[in-house]
Image (cartoon, rainbow, N blue to C red; front, side):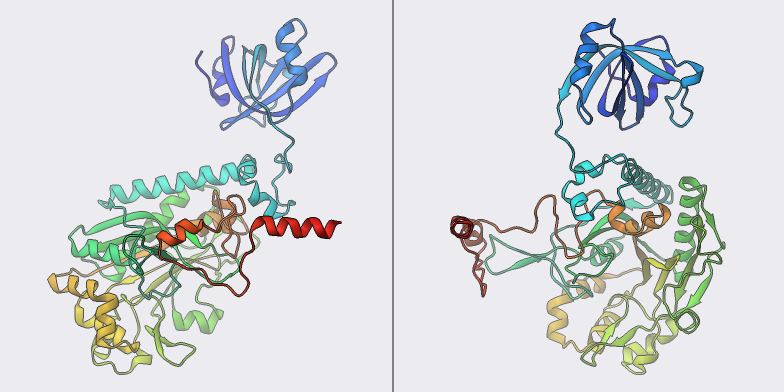
Length: 482
């Protein structure tokens, strides 16, 4: 028999239907047993009465979170029993048949609450249970709606979604790379992409003109508050544009997304205000200022652009490094200084960051599109000709074959959704997040691998304190207990 989603049952009063899901709540009133059945779409009250003997007897043993299939007639509830808080509140299922599909042990924590009172590491260990929670379910459904909106918006604007590789080359892009040893090429390594930056620029050289991707970005960062070793970004690049062209496009996308998916939210100012980096730092002491007039209003959204960043800054060793990424172009009036490598501290970049309620949610720029300008950036940073060729020769060569002016953005979708869902951190809007120090408590990753795998990868693991075999550890524990 065809299974109906629970929220569709209200359209079928008087019909005999099959529904299936998890036992949300079980309760008894006198001799009547009530089970609230839950599936992805909602909750349905199901009634077991003694006259339906077989179903009634089975109901006695059923416990919360069991997965069951029920057959019965959809009937109207008495007026006094109508629940206006749920979509199925005017109906119930008069159960005639029960099929237990899967039994469940007692859960390690409650899922009927919002979960904020529970130790987060326990929630992450049992994430597949935590995701049964209504709050997290809604977060992921909203995330789907946002990514679907983004795809549709850019598709309608003539962009092509193109996947870029997850195995690439290790290059200095700002953060530390995750590296992957090659089995077939001994002693050589791939890197996981910190972003699709180089690939999307090469797609502009290839002539695609308008690219986007919902892209995974992986960075081996030190533990830092609300960060994840892997995050997802809306990645966009387009050709034959100036800075204003791209900022107008992306701003329009954000406005339409909020108005379509989050109609309760109010954007404080349209068009988004713009601040220079210098103005933002002097006035707000931040390059991602919170411009909300009433920060206590959870539905108020204060977007702003920050522009005119310095191209270079000094690192801890006193050497010049880029503030955004090495492929950004300077503002046109500063290009001569870059090529001549003079007035370094005064060169401003075409970078544009977008902030929302005090959080940076994206950053982009117009890119350099000549080999000379790219080489000049790395030369300022202290790379010699050989190092530039070794690390970025593929990019420089590509730009010798004709590259259009182009620019784009990488915008963190996790952060955007967390803010719009009023969540305190991005872990609440990621299906399977990691801890701040990069551990997956559910899968117990990272983990050791077999010696055979290490040998195949031409790797030897050295440690000041070698890991003892499990049997040795267990025997020592037993002797201590004695």
